[in-house]
Amino acid sequence: MDMALAHETTALVSTLVAEAQRLGISWELRYGVVKSTTKLSAVFLVTMDGDSIPISVTSLIGRVGTSERVVILSTGPSNLWIIGSPGRFSITPYTPVWGNVGTATFNPNKGYYSQTGNLVFMWASAAVSNPGSGASTVTLTPPKQISRTEGIRQIIPFNGDGLVAAGIFTNGVCISFGGSAAGQPWERIRISSNGATNADKNLTGADLLAAGVLTTQGLYVTDAP
Image (cartoon, rainbow, N blue to C red; front, side):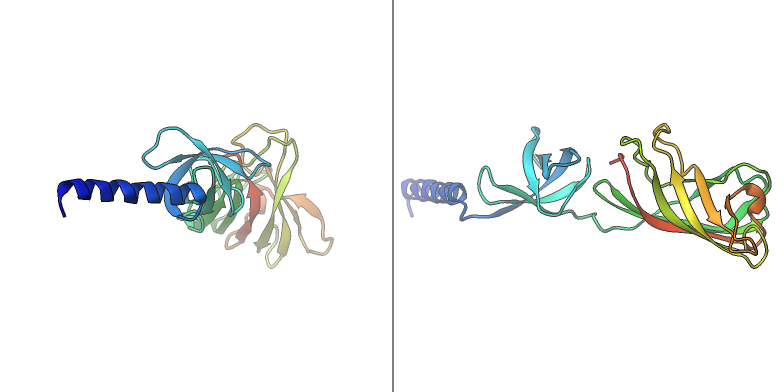
């Protein structure tokens, strides 16, 4: 094949590919990073790999978070769809920080979380190795900050074994208050003791008896990417 014919063939192929993309009969997978999100819209601004200017892309997988890496299906210049996220279902370890526990220490003290857009699933569990003290309410730092922008509370379930009194099995919730500043922990762990009086109370440092176990897991909304 001579050079002139080779150039003509290359130009023809390029034209056919461009026309196929324009007509939506040629699909292409690309990667990108989410630059901004809104709470109610399914359209997100994404910067494609190799580009510098964010463009609008519609998500087919629900909400995605800022800085989340996504897979984009292009079926034409104006038809861009988020169809996946490589790290979406990854599980990340974190170390829970239990506040206002006085002299309490924990071993083991484990936590994991997974984030999908603005929704976080967290699990935290700790065994009391040295008993706690004090009358202050126990708090728990989450893996991602709790959203408080709507001015309402969020809760996740809590379970305790051997807290308050030996052999007592407690159920309750970790509570965040909507009016609190961003970055605050779960400010209160509210429990029912399931004892003789089944009294409701805030979990305090003095309730953390040796060998007691604290466990919480659930979903909450975050503003953090």
